Length: 305
Image 1 (spheres, rainbow, N blue to C red):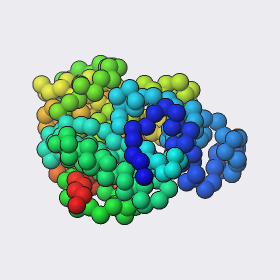
Image 2 (image 1 turned 180 degrees about the vertical axis):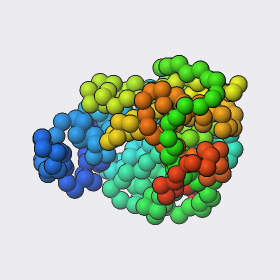
Image 3 (image 1 turned 120 degrees about the vertical axis):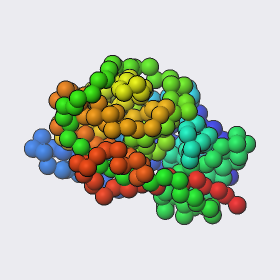
Image 4 (image 1 turned 45 degrees about the vertical axis):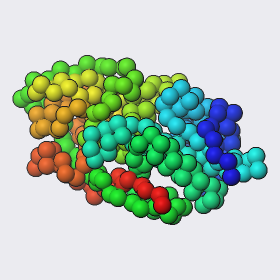
């Protein structure tokens, strides 16, 4: 088994590794009914909907280029010259309990040996860099490796109505996607993976070449409210255009005034409902009218023997 950093030429093999896990390819016909079709009958965006950028060679190459330019760390596992595994990680610095870390975003492999080798390689990198190795708790992933898991935070999701509020704030579009903007900042809202991984997914304009992706509104905002600075991405729901999900990076703690400012901004933009995935310990800042949907997600530190 050989572990190395990925190169652009690996894109085809990594795509094949991911698409092999999709049992059925489907799309909506003109009448809105689901139909099963051959992979080659789907366009690039329809393939994307089955699992993201690694569902086609075209989007895989765009994403790999982004990672190799500093967006993230892609690793591959080879056995006898054949690519048998892929891992993707993001380096970040956030306030405690996360600190300096490598976040393991995904591991896709043909067998447990390849998955364990990739995780082990990332653990060694984290150790050399004096970083923690973080992962979203995933029993399928952890089944590949013997490790000690220490829970750090639990994310829960709530919805709030967008409405006018008596609060002064300023919100302007802010396209600069440099990750230095969020170094040392927390991500109290929308941290499904890590602050850096979410930043690379949401703030960069790498998917603007997909016409279907451009029809879904995405706002990248620099907002100040109650003397506090924050960067906010608001993403329109794929199926309900009057709903948006909020993602937030900030150097300070959340306050009710910030939530009020976001709700007022959402109302002015024509949204009816705003979704907030927030750490369990901070959920009280949303107020008594927040409605939970039962979703929860744990971030853990991973320690290998």
